[in-house]
Amino acid sequence: MTSTQLDRAHVWHPFTQMRDWNAPGHEPIVIVEGSGAVLKAEDGREYLDGNSSIWTNLHGHRRPEIDSAIRAQLDRIAHSSFLGLTNDLAPRLAHDLLEVAALPDHKVFFSDDGSTAMEAALKMVHQARLQRGEARRSVFFSLANGYHGDTVGAMSAGHSPTFHRAYRPLLFETREVISPACYRCPYNRAEPVRGIEARPSRQCGWECIGELETALDAAGDTASAFVLEPRVQGAAGMTMHPHGYLEKAAAACRERGIWLILDEVMTGFGRTGTMFAFQAEKVTPDLVALAKGLTGGYLPVAATLASETIFDAFLGGYAELKTFFHGHSYTGNALGCAAALANLAIFENESTLEKNAGLERILADRLAVFWDHPHVGDVRQEGLIAAVEIVQDFTTRTPFPFTDRIGHRVCEAAKKHGLLTRPIGDVLVLMPPYCVTETQIGQMVDALWRALEEVLPMKSN
Ligand SMILES: Cc1ncc(COP(=O)(O)O)c(C=O)c1O
Image: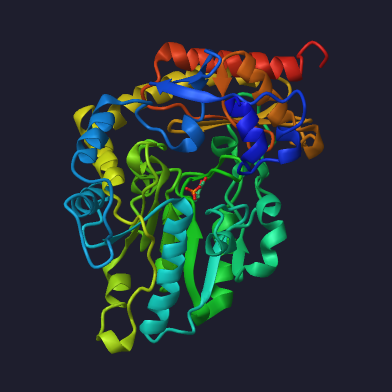
């Protein structure tokens, strides 16, 4: 049997309507190899990896440094338990992570993926509050349309109408606060201006911060923690926050004794320009969740960085049961840690952040073409994350009916032009690996543009 036949017979894919997947005529792409920013399929076709393999890959596929670090580790050991034991890689990785995060007094709790990193953060806050005699502080706040993963705790902190609808009865309550997503913000009085992103052209009085403060004050001494994806909310549609929001929100939390949980699962490791998005705004988060790019997109390793205050709340006599009763079988996995250490070394050896600044400018120049299309409502970019939002009406920002599946159709068409990327609703995403060349950026933009033109021809407008 072919890979496709086996897949159809036995596999259930994530976030996928399997009736469509298994419908006659749908021929899935079977990836068998990768190199740099290019993925190769079983039929020999090559594709540019336009979303870094769902936002995980950093320095490209088959990076020799990461490959050889994993191979070398295989000659020693692949995995041993982190319960009651340690190994010679995870502590070094913890040290290096805290160094690049400039959070020297935090502690690192390892897990497997973005959802578990967030799940651990939420449980840490809950238990730390209890053990500090602050049981009243039980209310979590999080941003509208936020997405923090698919486990039950992570979903509770999320507010995705599509993803979370069915699971609401399973979730604990978190208070939703307005997202500072300028393009669709009800407080943004500016008319859309073609060629200018919504954030710099917005007209508002930081009402989003005012609303946050009102919500925090309403909870008074029951307020516990504020959860957010700093600067860019990925699954919300790559919605981007105005610079300064994070600093203001962090100050509002600090003044009220509320802990700040930052989900840097997507934004971490240079994606937004700085190593971590929070470093651009000079805030000190109480908890940070990291995953995806932590191993350069190779292996599932995640980390939750926790402040000394939170860590100390778990110290006590054995019988007090203050232990953090949470852990995963593959915690501290040696192969993953070897990949992560090699990944961080590349940042240092190649001055990745400086190099990326040049790529960001090239991407910005090339993206400008999208403003020529009458159905492009917003073109936004933060670091090496680019988003093109398609709308039915530019002036009113009215979206197409979701059943038209414009974003999906454009990305399907882009495959024919050699680009793989996944839309979020009608938001087209380009998030190249950092090894991407100027030529490849041009090819990605051209492929997406041609695909957009095929689905929504300009001539008919
Ligand atoms: C911001 C954010 N948090 C958490 C997650 C969940 O990560 P994972 O899919 O590794 O569980 C994601 C995944 O896309 C994410 O974008």
